[in-house]
Image (tube, rainbow, N blue to C red; front, side, top):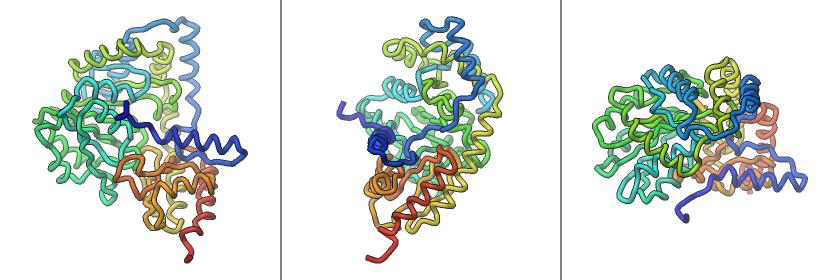
Length: 385
């Protein structure tokens, strides 16, 4: 158990809520959760499912209708041919990380993953006894891998590579040309790719490329996706993985030993999400783009801040080395003194030190107010002592 880490966003949220109970005003830019309501047609489908009796156990792998819908959706959006039997429906996206790593990794295995990156990657790698091999994401490359460094870290012990594009916490995406190179490096190796594509519909510069779409890669790729970010369904706990059939069998075995099944009525809502109107997703993405442009422009006016424009997700990953303050100390200071909850980039890995992550999944007025609050307290580091 000592190998497992926690997710810092939830820790900071608890601290921020404690300040609010004391009467303090806090703007929440720490949690990665869309502030939009779940679209009405999805809620209606969930309610209807309850009335229709979808309150009992369902198949461990997921309702056949949802698996068929997911297979069609993934085939269409990734340019591959996915079959329902390759789909595992789980309560949220994290179980796909948990189950696939439990099934594939043990002592002696090495896992390449992005640093900074989602904290659960390293947590689960260590939990299985495998060795984490972090690859720093390079700001000058839009927070994509240095490909030569990546190549040098591959070894006969590499069993898994984790990709995340669009990326948390940086908002970066892996360019198509880089994905071609990565596929070429991995195609003939005894390695499986965990491709975390949870932000695939929140991309501002074209459509992100899935490594599964390249020749020879679908049979060695786990596509991780879900409904939380795309459809603002974080509390519904509905995610899925699309993977080789032999691995789907193992994941379903772990699923039946832990959760039995995913709630049936949420799966019916998931069908409505995939099969229903998509204008809600487009509108949400357009609003995130508007917020991104405004908050990044504002943060770039803060002394000591440098905020690259993210190409996906809903995070601004700000270089704060110019302040002369450590990212952990500054994140704590902004919470306690400015009432702005944000995350220390170091919580996402050693190469996140010197950065602060701000989630712009909040209203535009709140985002602009947060920038002004930060500006007011920036006198601590922007004026001579």
